[in-house]
Image (cartoon, rainbow, N blue to C red; front, side, top):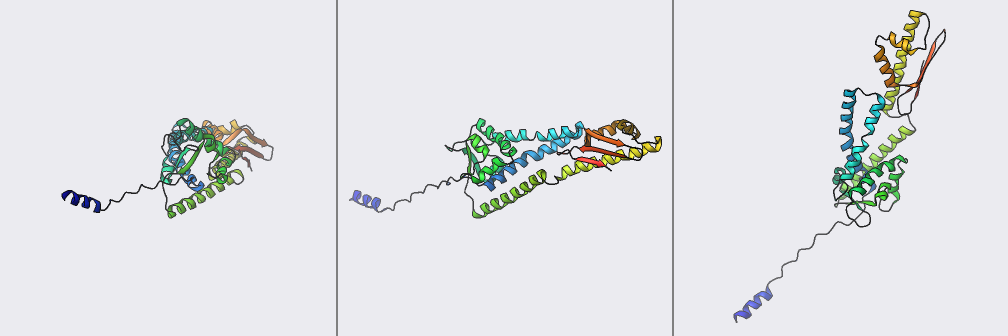
Length: 281
């Protein structure tokens, strides 16, 4: 009788609900816009501290303009290794982590090795030097793979679910940033150039004005204009510094002073990216 009562209690007891397994994130490729946001975040993390350090080094070492360009250009080296180290073995760069995307093998979904991540990082610059066509490939590929993804056999996937608002914000931000970069590159290739380049041209033009002033001083003292820059530098009062200033803003190989009894004309090339020709007057 007692066994029968125990058996009834066990049979009547409600079954405990079975916990449902958490749903996994559906594997979807990351969008182009959010990938671009992550890339700019990562670039800023490396480039901003590097530029500050480079400015300090250039000031302390008294580098000329060409050496400064070389120093600034070396920012690509730490960026390549940063991307490589944090794109392999299941790690993510800070930009990708904030955006919620990750890099993985395009066939297996496994993390990349360091070697393949390094190839992918270097591939950024291959994608860029061919007029950004390597990046534009992501717009037409069905998994948004850019040229550097094909080189490394990688794909960028979603790492976590996102709300509608976050998706919209990332898309709008990414499109705005892409438009800004496009117009910047367009101005560099076809427009007047950046403010930095224009400043270099202005500095070159100002230096020609100083040389012209020394021409007038030379004529006042000796009665004629001269095409000898060394004579003019002596008149400046500090010929060594004058020569340094000339070398810093002008390309000496194309420097010309044409003189006559009535006047003179000075021409040179500024040390901007385009080696712009400047004149006085």
